[in-house]
Length: 288
Image (cartoon, rainbow, N blue to C red; front, side, top):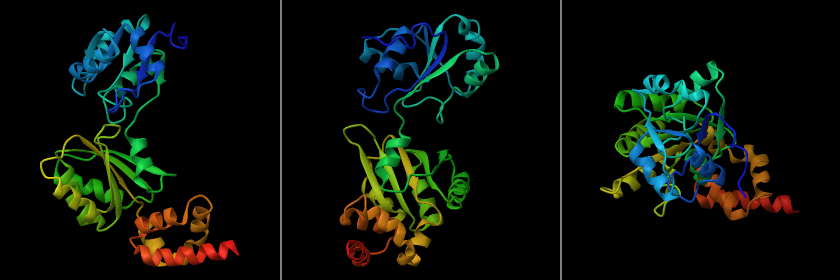
């Protein structure tokens, strides 16, 4: 049975679309798209693939950083009596994608807006990283040139939260080189082709992950999501394991001994053997 949430909604619906696997789209998103009078998208050719898969035919208007104001002028009158959908090429619109000025225009002019939540590469990349994600900082896209890239990573180097950002396949090697120069052997995670058949996550020190990409010569495609541990994570944990007895005890109450050893090892860089001996000793004390 169809939901009636969007049936009479006039204005803009911000709709999340799949980031890879076309099955990752909600019934509400499909209904909203199918009921739209106009769909605003980044690349019509890309969006047509999704619409064809859904069996939906709609008028598409391309919106990007260079024509956003013209698009706003073009659809201003339609915003008053039409159902308009905003989508991006993949994932949740406005997350490092165009559309911000359009939404600001709607808010300023009391045009209704709503969000149909769904896929985003940020959340699964964080979930799969093995890095603490109770707090995180989203930094957007890695810059195009080396100088700006170095400034970008230096900012992340001073942030005491897990950091996440996007990198294109054209910049991933440069990014890893800068990460290695600035962050040394900080623990990172890089996710590629999330939700697709070739989904992969590289975890470990910057140096170790960088070697994975050296070995992948010729196979570096798509967009990457990079996760970096907080600035003080390695220093505070590795200096003295005993000072983190409370945190590790809490992990032992939720995870197996093997999982806790793996987590502490990845976050500190301390050998698994040393971590295992310490965590096992702590576990025995807890079990007394």
